[in-house]
Length: 301
Image (cartoon, rainbow, N blue to C red; front, side, top):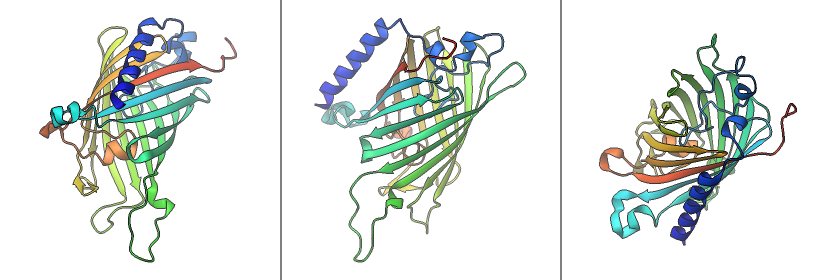
């Protein structure tokens, strides 16, 4: 069943990408630089996410982004697990632009039955006299997996299921083909072994995009943990997350093929709880599909 769903989504995505021409990503993400190019900020990224994490780009006001992110199991498992195809996880999400500087989103991930919500606030935009774009991103997520067996008298509290991610996104477009972003990050876990680890994982992320053509780009992101580098997750050691992607834009669509050591799709998961290692060949193939719709037309439109 998982394979049939994957093939259906993949074929649907490729068909719509090949045929969509009515809507433009340029008109629905940070669209001010289309309407007033001489005065508008510089568009550092086209998509609102680099791969797993947020970019500084925001949806325009009144624009809805329907997202499907899919990660297969480990390629290293070979034919026994059909090279990861039999062990896949999916996140389905909706993002919405409330204003040009504020967007929000919700999602659900199959892995750990996790619900998440986030907001992103654009604080500064790169301009001729402003060297960088600056945004704040905040996320909260809750795992809905069953409570573990506890000693008599102990209770499994709601707080134990909650995680918080806070980021500053600092980005610059250096040339027409190169954009880079720095992401200082704090992930707060309400429940950890406090005798060994901190509740807060502090990390520095770096991401970027290299445009090959107008519609094709290579993307990448890496998160290096400054604290909790030896944090255990389900008794397993964790590693820094490294992801590479190949991005295709067409109309209101973005399709991205991904190779990563993280199967998780929320901040708490891929930043601090990645249990697979590139050096050991523990990689996951996956894809992201984004379809953008304008729900409310701009006042000047």
